[in-house]
Amino acid sequence: MTDVPWLLLMIAVPAVGAAVVAALPPAREALARTVTLAVGLLVLLLAVGATASFDPGGERFQHTSSVAWIPDFGVSFALGVDGIALVMLLLTGVLVPVVVGASWRDTAPARASMRAFWAWLLLLEATLVGVFAATDVFLFYVFFEAMLVPMYFLIGSFGGPGRQYAAVKFFVYSLLGGLVMLAAVIGLYVVSDSALGEGTFAFDALRQLDIDPGVQKLLFAGFFLAFAIKSPLVPFHTWLPDAGAEAPIAGSVLLVGVLDKVGTYGFLRYCLPLFPDASRDLAPWVLVLAVAGVLYAALLAVGQSDLKRLVSYTSIAHFGFIALGIFAFTTEAATGAVVYMVNHGIATGLLFVVVGMVIARTGSRRIADAGGLAATAPVLAGVFLVAGLASLALPGTGSFVGEFLVLIGAFPERPVFTIVATAGIVLAALYVLLLVQRTLHGPPPAEEPAPVGGGATAVAARTRVRDLTRLETAVVAPLVALVVVLGVYPQPLIDLVTPAVEATLADLGGAR
Figure 1 (spheres, rainbow, N blue to C red):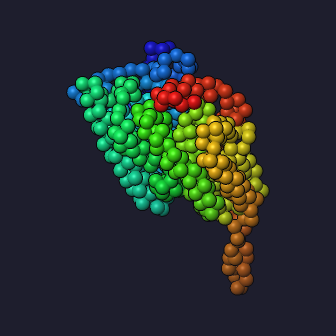
Figure 2 (cartoon, helix red, strand yellow):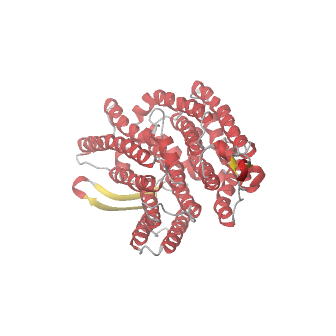
Figure 3 (cartoon, one colour):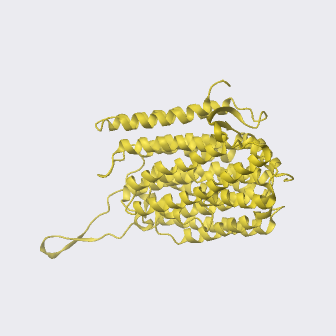
């Protein structure tokens, strides 16, 4: 099993699947979605196979492969994963089949076709796998920028009324951050050429360089800006509420569930090991942004009237906790940050899927228009409650494990930031419980009088909201199960992640 090119297959299968789906004739829409689901499930099986053959106590990077790509500039198509990257691949593998199922009955707007939707979805999966699997910095940059294209078209072609503005804003923010990172990548190549006599983009070689602290800060800033935008940290966050609200549900789930994790993954993979001195010197400033994001986004979430914008703001607050765990520089806090990344993707993905089901039934994104769901759709309401409680990190859910590890791991080293961040827990309870109360138990939307003959009026009864169908139950069941299982028994996930975290902090030097 160790000879199987797991990572290359995980990139090639969805990429080829995207081409096949795009080439299907217009009349084969049903076949296109079936192929998409089959490809998504195959990638999940490949991720499980890669995990089964991964030894957490073995080499830091496993399933490695490298082929010279641009040899004159030291660029290789180099792949490999540690525990951190592996769990992100598993998360991607789980969410893609879920969003395919959640979009199974969707129809394309007049401006597009569902074949294009499925093709962009598979291409996005291929680029996301590439981002997490790349061990060549230039290759990472290529995938980092390439994943913007399918997400741009998913938002711009299949999103809501404000889709064009949201898609352009997402693309411009991310592209500008990526261009700044490109300058830092080139700078890193120049430094390696000066130190080694030959320029390289290989991660293993670059992390062993002894870079001048002043130069480190400049290079750190280039990488950090791109990752802070992607995360997103306040004040680089403003694209996410628009993109999350206007994207189709499949796009929203992958945007907040996986794509945003590229930013926090980048902090761990590149900023800390490659620029240890700059990371330690600039950590207090990063923590200020992280804690500010926790409080600011939570306060904004409380005041939202749009379901999707509220969920988007909650994600910004959660990413503040993740950044706190990363830049606390303790094994416990950093492990908690990675565990939080995985469980946030599952919990928020579930919440976005359920929100999409609510919107499909009510025809509105307004919270006020979803009142009284518990009375008419009790199973849907129950899943909504589970998703909300997981989002606020209730004990017994996976998110609680990550948040708890972050807080107890960060407190000994960063007590002030940790204490301030805990206020976000109270605010999380407030915005989630208000959301649950208004949608599940709040009054139904006001019924409007309809004129009838003779000048009399009759009240138009609200159509009863149907409960979950068998297909919808099958879509949400895996995520509900993961929320509970990872909340009750998170040890396998922690064991998989911890060695990679320890190796990352060892590169940082002297971290606990």
